[in-house]
Image (cartoon, rainbow, N blue to C red; front, side, top):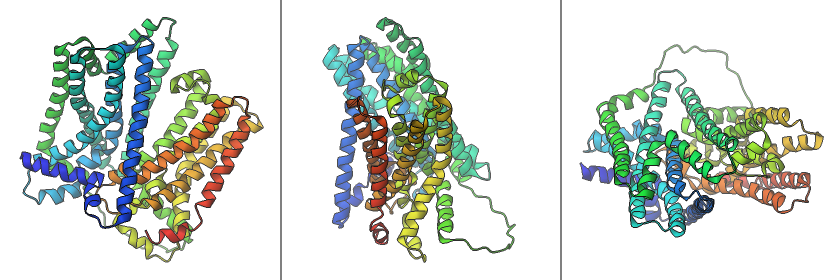
Length: 527
C-alpha cells in the first residue's frame, strides 16, 4: 500500500503545482509563465520570512524572547486551520477524483491517506517558512542549546497535523450539513463565512484584551501573552517548553496529541469514506418542470446572470474571493465600535489607520476579486463561451459587473458604519466614498486583465485555480502595491494633504482601469 500512497501523492502534488506540464509542454509561453510564477513564490517567501524575522526580533528585544516558539507555533496552527478549512471538503471528498482513482488497483485507505498527505505537505512547507526565520532570529540573539534546533525540526514536521485534522473535521461537518439542504452551496458558503467571522472576531478580541490590560511592565505583558497562548492552544505551549526548556516529556505529549488525533480521525474516516463521499455529492432531482412564458433579456444582463450563477455554484470560489469584502466590513465595524487608537494597536499600524483609512478600506477587496480567476474557472468549457454570439467586450463587462454587484452590499454596509462612526465633513466623506469605490472598480478590471495573461483552463480541482494559480498571486501583489505606495507617501510626508493623495490615487486607479480595456476584448478571443 505504501507504493500506492506514494504514487497517488506524487501525482496529486505534480498536478497541484503544474510540474508535469512545465516538464513536458512544448509551449514556450507556458514555460515562461511557470518561471514567472516561481519568481512570485520566491518573492512571497522572502516577504514572509522578513515579516516573521522582524516580529521575532521585536519580541526578543522587548524581553519576551521565550514567547517566540509558542507565538510561532500558534501562528502556524492558525494559518493552517484558516486556509485548510476552505479546501478540506473539496479536496478530501472530491467525488470525481475518487471515481477516477477507485477504478485503479488502489485501496480506499491509500486514496484517503494520499489526499491528506497532499494537504499535509503543502501545509508543512508553509509551516517551515514561518518557523525557520523565527528560529534563526531567536537562535542568533538568544544562543539556545542544540535541543532547541532538534525540537524545532520535529515541530516543523508534526506541527501542521493537529490543525489539519481539526480543519478536515470542520470542513467535513460544513459539507455534511450543507448537503442536506436544497441550496447546498449557499448553506456551505454561509456556514464557512460564519466560521471565518468567528475566527477573525476571536483574534480581534484577543488583540483588544492585550491592549486594554497592557501595563508599563513588559514582564507582565509577557506573562499575559504566555497565559493566553496556554489557555487558547496548549500544544503551542508544550512545544515552547520543549524547545526553550529542553523538556522531552512536553515534546512527546505534543507528538502524541498531534499524531494520535490524526491517526484516530483517519481510522474513523476510512470506514465511512465511500458513503460520505457519495452522500455529500448526491443530487436530488424532481420532475416538476412546467413550461412558462419565455422572456428575452439583454446580452449584458444574460451574461451577468450567467456569471453570478457560475460564481455561487462553487463554495471554494465564493469563500476565498469574499474574504476581502468581509474584512472590509469587519474593519468598518471595528472603527464603529472601538476608538481609533485601539483599532490601530490591533492592526499594528499606529498613526496610520486614521490617516489612510479610505485606502485601507478600499484595498481589502482588491486582494482577491472574483475576476482574478473568473476566466480560469470556465475551465475546459471556455470554448463554449467563445462560440456564443457575444463579443470579447461583452464578456469583460459581464465579469466586471458581476464583481461590482457582489462587492456592492459590503461596500454600502462599510460606508454606513464608517459614516456613523466618524461623522465626516464633506471632503472626508467624499474621500470615504470615492477611494474605496475606485479601488473596487480597479480591482475588478485588474483581476480580469491579469487572468487574461495567466489563464489556467486545464485543471481538475477548483482549489488549484482559486488558491494556487499565478493569476491570483499576481493580482494580490498588484493590489498590495496600489495600497502600499499611497500609504508610504502619507506616512513619509506628514505635511502632505491626505485629500491630495486620495485624489491622485483615485485618478490613477480609474485611468489604469480604463487603459486595461484597450485591445483586451481581442486578446480574450485567443486565450
